[in-house]
Length: 274
Image (cartoon, rainbow, N blue to C red):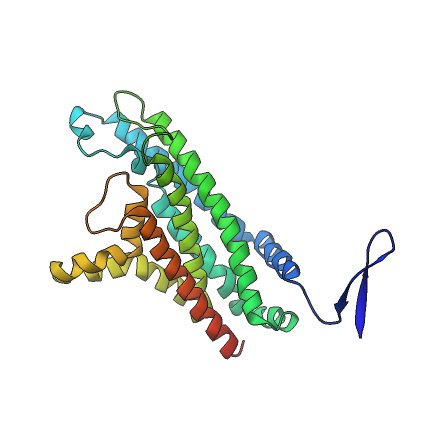
C-alpha cells in the first residue's frame, strides 16, 4: 500500500509508502517539542539574562575600580565574555532535558513507536538542539562583547571586534557553549535520567578539574589541556593560557568529545529497550 501526496493544485506529489516518515518530519517534531515545553524557554531565557548580565556586571566593576596596575595582563575581551561560564551550565542542562525529559515522562516510547529508526531520532534532536543553541550562544556572545566593551570606557582598556583575536574569541565562545550542549545530550542519551546526567555533566566541568589538580603537577599539567574548562579558557582568552592548547585545536577536541558522547549514546539507544 502507498499514499500519494496531493498538493494544493490537486496534482499528485511524490509517493510516500504508508507508515514511513522523512527526516524533515522528525525535525519539525523535535522543534515542536522544544518550543512548546516551558522548561526549554525558561532555560534559554535564563541563559540570555544571566550570561549578558554577569558579563555587564564584571565590566562595570572593572571600570569602577580601574587603576593603572590593572592594565598588566588585563584581557578586556575575556572579561566581557565571562558570563559564558554560566551559559555553559544552563545550555548543558537544556541538552540533558531534551532527551532525559522524555524518558522521565515515558513519552520516549511514543516517539520511538512513531519513528522506529532510533539513530534518526537522535540525529534530529542533535540538529535541532545544535542549531538553537548555536544561534542563542552566538547572539549572547556578541551582545555581551559589545555591551562589555562599551562599559569598559577610558581609562580602562577595551578592544574592538577588529582587534587581533577578538572576533575569534567571540565566535569561539558561541561554538564552545553549543558543543557543550551537544555533549550533554550525548550524556543524557547514555544515562537516560535527568539528575544522573546533570550530575555527570557538572562533574566533568567542576569536579574533574579539582581531582586533576590534586595530582602531581607533572601529571596534572599534561592532562589539564584536555579538560573542557581549560578548553573554554583557551577559546575565550586573547592571551595564551598555561597548560592549554591553541583555541581552534581546543574546539576541535571538544567537538570530538561531543561526537563521541553522541555516538556512544546512539549505540546504547539502539541496543536498549525504551
